[in-house]
Length: 139
Image (tube, rainbow, N blue to C red):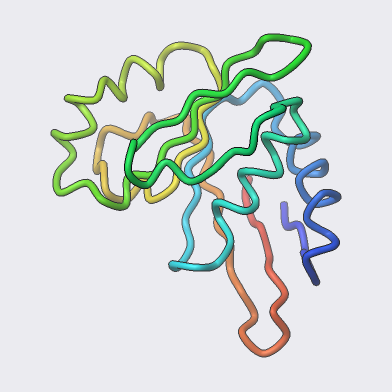
């Protein structure tokens, strides 16, 4: 599936489309170059799911936990960019989060190597640098 985001005003619509397509899947691995909008998109997905607080990049904390209201569903947002090895993710307890049954939204999954579960959905965000448009692609 591909979702086009032609400008910033379309992010909410794109996040809704993404959520509608998630099905029962719980682990989403976001790939894309630095600055392509992974955090912005994940933040809007969280907002659309009912997270009241602003979902920021967990660059320094590595993982943020949010609660969707009114369901109380836990959502984990990871940013593994600063990891120096997959062992750091293990030390953080990443596998416990991944197999918790809670929603996991992962930035920079390439930094954790084989720790990423096989059932993780690969989400690719690409940018058209001439127009500023973004495309969110996943299966």
